[in-house]
Image (cartoon, rainbow, N blue to C red):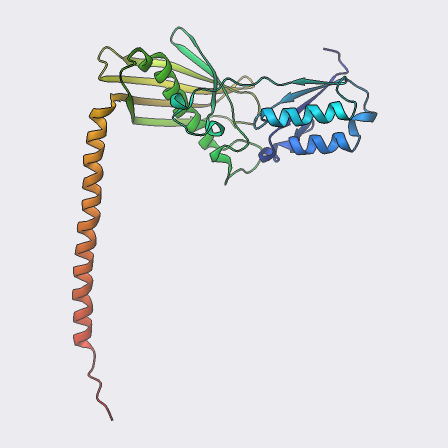
Length: 272
C-alpha cells in the first residue's frame, strides 16, 4: 500500500463517540462528507474499512453514493459479510443480536470474530464514550460457549435437544473494547461428554483486540437433555408462584389485622 494512502474507518451510527478519533466516521457522517465534496479535492487514494455496527445495507449505501459522486475509483472499500452463528447456536431469535461470526476450530481452541450490529439489543439504551460497553463482552462470551457446544458437541446427538445451565461465570475486564475488529477465543478447560444425557464443560473465553486482551471469562456449565431439566424448571417455577401467593396471603392478613387495631384506637366521632 502506498505511503500516501489514507485509511478511513467507518462505524455504525451508535458509535458516534468513537468518531471523535481522527479518520473515524459514522456511516451518516461519511455519506454527508462525500455529498459535501470533501473527498473530491483530496486526491489521495483512500482505503475505507468497516468497523463494528456497519451492516451490508450500510455498505451498499456508501458504495452507491461513491459511485454516484464519481469517487468509486479512488475509494477502496473493504467489507466482508460475516458468517453469523446460527440462531439456534447463539440462542437468539434476531440476527441483529448475534455477536459470534466466522466460528472455527483448531484442536481444542475455538475462535470467532466479534460482530456488533448497530441495532444490537445491548446498544439500544446504553452507549457512552468511545468504548463498547462491558455487557457486550459478557454476552459475547455466553454466546461463544453456546455456539461452540451446539456446533461441535451437541450436534453429535441429533435426536436430542439440550438445555444449558450456567453454574458459574466470572469476567475480568483488562482493557477497553472498541468498535473495531476483535477476536473471541474459547479454550477448553474441561469437557465431560461421554454421557449424552449430561454434557459438562469448563472454559476460558477471551476477547482480543489490537494485540491486547480486552476481557477473559471463566465459565462452567452443563448441557442437560431438555426433558430432564425442563421438568425440574417447571417444578421450581411452580414453587416460586406458590411462594408469592402464600406471601401475599400473609401480608393481606397482617395488613387487615393492623388496620383493625388502628381503627379501635381512633377516638369516637359524635355528632354535635
